[in-house]
View 1 (cartoon, rainbow, N blue to C red):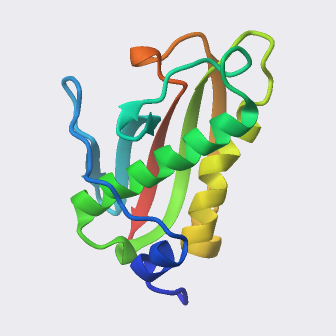
View 2: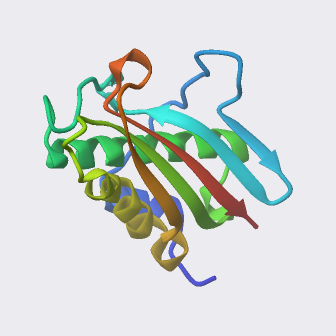
Length: 154
């Protein structure tokens, strides 16, 4: 795999990984099985506080894209805490996005692009992944977005 150092790439993008979060209930933030790392759903945060709101009501698609990018950064922080070296990520395999949205809002896929595009910026071709994006009527703590991830490791 010919790609730049992931930490150098994050620096070029102006991204500093935050401290990984701890689980809020009876689960782990990341579990490895073989060469796969399964990351639990991460809620969108803004300045370390849950980013609340509903797409199509109090938040725009652009707000949602920014929230999705923020979640992607948090997911990388968790993955780094688990595996200690993001250069060991072979590829991002699958992402599932839950978007707190009104029944009339139909741009969940565009909101989720905020995370998908970020992973492609960081990992190049190996950041492109399969994904699902769902509209939901509510998320824990009134968060606007939750994303879970599966990554393959070397």
